[in-house]
Structure formats: C-alpha cells, structure tokens
Length: 412
Image (cartoon, rainbow, N blue to C red):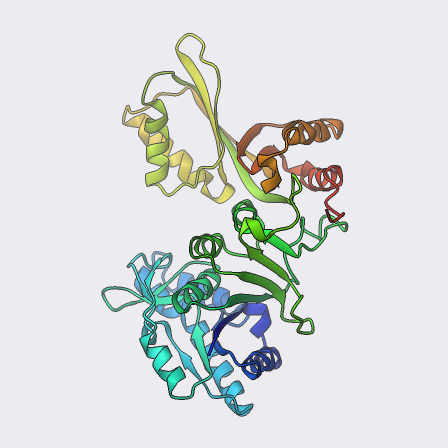
C-alpha cells in the first residue's frame, strides 16, 4: 500500500469533536487505499499547561524530567485518535516515540531525530493495521530517556516519518488553509499560494511566518518530501491548501512571493570596539556560547582604529547577550565604550526565488519604505531574501505597503 503521512496540530485536535473530525479525514484516505501514519500534537493549550506545572514546581528544572512531563500531552491525543478510528472500524493503534522507536540525540527539550526504523510499524501494517497514530514531538535518547524536539516539533516528526517511509505526501493540517503572501490579519489583500518552493518556505518560516516549523521545512527540502499545508476545518479537496515542493514544480516565478515579519526583534550596538583581526570572533563567540541567536550583523567604517558593531537578536535574549558581552569585557577579551540595546524594532522581509533572475527588487523595496517615511536601521540580504530592521511602530504599514508594491494580491 502507498503511505500517506497526516499531521494534526493542537487546534485540530483541541476537543473530542475535533478529533472525530480529523479521524473522518483519515478514514477518507484509508478508503482511497493508503496506509496512513497520523502524527498528532497535544490538544490545544495542553503543552502550555504542562510547562506551567514544571516551572511552578522547579524553576531550575531537570531537562530530562521536563521532557517526560511535557511529552505526555501527545500521548493522550494519540490514544484518543486511535480509539476514535477503532470506533469507525478502521484498524488503528497508537505509538509513543519510544515504541517506534524515534531515535534522537540526548539534547533534551531540543532533540534532533537521528533515525526512524520502519520495521515495527511496517510489521503491523503487514498484519492488517491501516493507521499508525504516532505521538509527535517526542523520541528516545541513546540513554533510553524520553526526549522532545522543541516547539513545533510535531511538524518535524511528520516530515521525518514521510522521509523514512517514502510517503507519497505529508499533509500538515492546521487552523489556516494554506501559505499566504503575508499575514491576512495585517493585509486583507493577502492571497493564498497554490504552490511555494522549499527555499521560499524555509526563508518565510525562519523570518517569522508561523505556518511551518523551520526544521520541518529543512528536512522536507533535504529528502524531497512533498508537503501540503491545509485547514482541518474546511471540506476535503485534492486542490486544497498549499503545496510546498521543488522549485521546478512552481509555475509562478515572480520576483517576490511573500512578505514576512518578526515582531520581537532587538538591535544591539557595541560602540567603539577595536578594529582588528579576530574582533568579530571575540564578540560573537561568547554570544554563541550563551545561546544568543544572532541574525543581522553590520560593522561600520573604522575611524582611528575603532568601529561600531551592530547585530539583531530576539528581544527575550537581550539580557543574556548583555551578560555575555559584559563578562567578555571584564575578562579583557573585548573592549567597548557602550552597549546600546534598542528593543523597539522589528524585521520585515521580502522573499522570492525570482530575485535570482530579476534585478531592482531591493531598490523598489527601499523606495517604498522611503515613500512611507520609514527609516531602515539594518539591511541583510541573501539570494532570495531582503530583510530590513525598522521601528516596530511601522511594522504593519511596511508589510501592507510592500505587499501592494509587489502586487502580491495578483496571481502571476
């Protein structure tokens, strides 16, 4: 039998009624002749509740016990989904990560999948099981402890299973009906895309679009897994949702496919650091060791052997960054006159594979922001992306203006 992977997020399994609705979708695919692997998240709000219990009990918790606790939400959903399918006379059973087993490294709370042996589930398919309901987000470490993959980890679980089992497709069911040119809550002109390339989706996911977890898109691109993002609240249709696929399958080749934003950014500037070989390593080494996720970096022109170094990071990592840099200064590794943190900025990005072959996108983007009176603080580019750091109060205006400028409401 061909294999199909279906993943249901927390909102899609938030209640027993929604689990029944999801189970009916699974039943339709079984009727088409598929063996189905269903990946489920915890019921909406359940993981947050469990994390709250952990923090209240032990603020400096043991990460291994954290994983044991927060992974339990997926176990409940998997069992309920299997029972619901059985009530529909669909042969199904639930699987926890250790039963598959989903083998991961031992980085608790942010583990990475290393291997998914297919023998156990395939043996059950051979015995007549039609649906394997797998608890997403979890695995087992080399030491035999439960691990979790981090927020959004069920997406990664689904793609990894699709790759391991050679699935025909991986369908990600969520509370939105596909990938849009931008956030519809900000621009009512946002248009749903029928297809988008892996590279564009990876950029959009990393730049703030919350439709898919970044690691899941990386996996899909590496193993050429066809991903479809669709709503669990709309009627089933073969044309529904957005297909994330290889670039050559995307018919539209416009310069910009989407506008993404990240609200919670901070701009940090080290004033007057020595302009010498190794200074960047001396700054960003301690930041890396402290777990600070540095994004955009700009170095000013040096004057009299001194320069300014600016970088962006998430706002919730500002204090960690300040501590790491102050400690490096105290140790004599770096010397700077002042550390300035601006926590009232955001990042807005234009993404599109068409940028490779069409010039003028950056000029058009910068002119649009200028026309709206928006000052650009930092710029970063890649082959298919242009990102700018601007004052947060202008975020919605910038997104709307850029969406209009590149006429994203129109199909190519």
